[in-house]
Length: 95
Image (cartoon, rainbow, N blue to C red; front, top):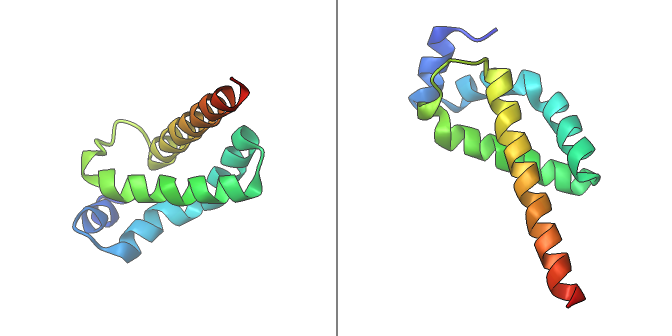
């Protein structure tokens, strides 16, 4: 459960607090990225990119949604962007 104190500590740069916020969701984020991307390696990379984006964007988290939903949105957007890049690269190779 996310507490205001944990969130405040994470926003202040406390890495342990950030892990307390995100660790409960790592497994499901990895599985979700795998479902979208179809590759374990790509899903692991996207999980790391998701957590990095969340760390960098934590001050912008307004709390209108749960941390879980916020992390999933970051992950899904990252996965969709990766698929777009892959598709564009494939189109470029086919020409």
